[in-house]
Length: 278
Image (cartoon, rainbow, N blue to C red; front, side, top):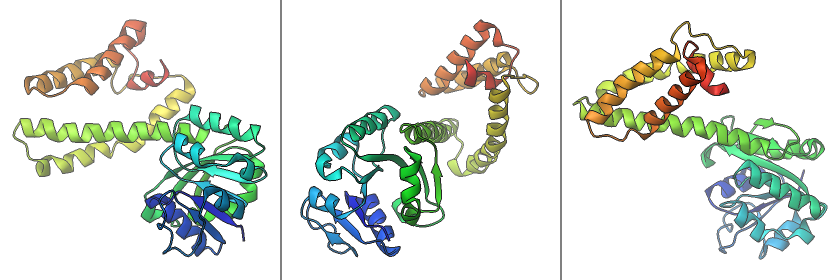
């Protein structure tokens, strides 16, 4: 069993500590606000340095990289493996990796794509990037957090980059969902009346993702189903309805502007996937 330290006992940090302890890894925890770990099956350290000293695998899960750096003791960490699950940008991940290398610390950057309740179960997806040997050394211990784990390579920023790209998709889509209900309400359509149709429309997305990914890989963007010129006309119609109802048109207006730039660049006869490769 691997001795594990968890720094930070917010909801996610508590879930991580609970999962490690349940997998019988000796677990030490620390939190800036005392008392949060007293109900866990773990040793509660008085200081972050004391907690770090107790584990060969040190997990930090706090608000962001700035807070993570503020609680980490480089001297005590030297010779240990640090896994940062705080989340942030690829640039921040690479900067943290450079700091860790300066201090002789094996560093893995990670991203959790799950809620605290899912940790330890099959739905918990986790991305890791950094030195392959360090990841392999601790792979079995990290499996306590969820076996749906993905090692993405040596570039420390790669896990954060995957996270940013996927979160881009999610929140853009969620913005579209809420805007759909606002536009529907403005035209006296109830949310319950249109929700089923909205789900049916989104059901096309998995196949569309595969199609566009294939087009990007091939560098070929056929406009057989719809050309960018026809898409521009459709977006004009939608935007006229949005504006007529006094609703925000920022997101879809930006999409139309991007489509028009592609048309001006000579891609009007190609399909929507071309926007992924401009």
